[in-house]
Length: 332
Length: 182
Image 1 (cartoon, each protein chain N blue to C red):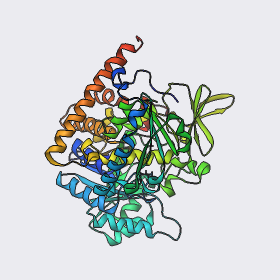
Image 2: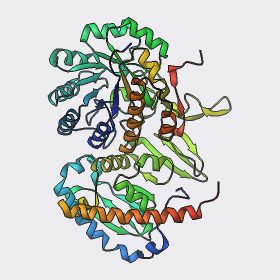
Image 3: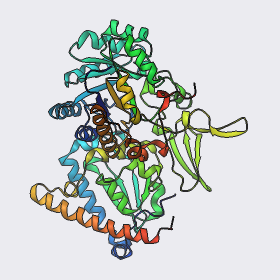
Image 4: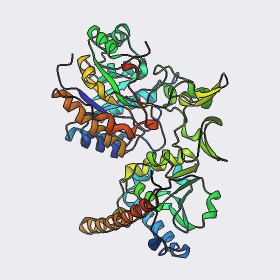
């Protein structure tokens, strides 16, 4: 069980969002550079080196930390860009680097000993053996847990490992084990693991048709919406497809994770930090979600509960539908 | 194109103040504002990357005219155009003028407005995303576009945002009166 106060780790896609997250009560913000070294490589998003240095100064002045995600996998024979990103993050005063690629972890461990290493969810490390390997080999201080574990499994894991754990509590969900999904690359030639982008926007189109709007990815129809029906961003894993004569969300319903009601359980399971997903979301989302979780975490830390959080955050979820995901594996 | 039926629209009295020809002086004025903003905050336009040369067709559906914007920093161009000129642009963004202005000043969330179909987009999605993220980060106030600073900037911001607030309230009342009963 964590002895200290749980840390609230919040997303920042731009400097303005970083400031919004800090002012809303984030203990730490995570962000990335404006290139393929991080898993949210979208146009107009992310930080230059200068912006990161300013963001770190702002966060530190307000008592918050900055964690830099360099969490995609380096290209064969071309790890230079990833090493340079790690060097720049260290020069800017980042508190931690979040990485998954062994080459990047090795570079940080050998060259930037003052910077904490957090193992990205992209590494999909969910066993004491895997986490132990990264701890022994690279000195990782924290592991971001894949979203496939129940609260009971997290508690058991925490009893068997020496490093801190960070668990996602809100935002988009992936259907597959992180770091191992290449679904997007089959349709677009690009994947989040290598290029930092799932469903690259240059291959997304919304086409008006008689009585409907089709959302397409690289020409493939992912979903079709009636007039007035809320639309979504087309990802293959959350597409509606026809199989066996039935049209349905074949892989995963477009629902969002909300484990706001499980904060006390995650604390009891020994989780050190709670992570909010959404570096691609705007200041409005970040401010509202961070404020709600700040209130909920503080309430839990004072021995109360966080039941109001579901109501507050209902409008911020994809498709306005929420799930506790694998944290409560009711299907077992 | 689909937009929300109950989204605040410009009240008729305000709309009549802006017939098609009334928009014409806005083109050169907004061009100057944008170029001047680029001179003061060049980093702001870096975020657009290659999309700064894209042509954005902005269509306020409750006005008689539309705009094309090429946000190329000190080479930016804003033109007031007819609604029929959409096809020549890379991206088309449509919505009620008050909603579009709220996107600019950060009052409303662009994702939420798009997913709920209050605004609509077509054309190059990546260029829209780059513009949306740039605007999100810019935290623009009216005084920024006018190149004002200090006490005068605060005064102008208060005045313009206050006036916009009044128009929004009028529009809200107008929309509620027309909304179907649940």
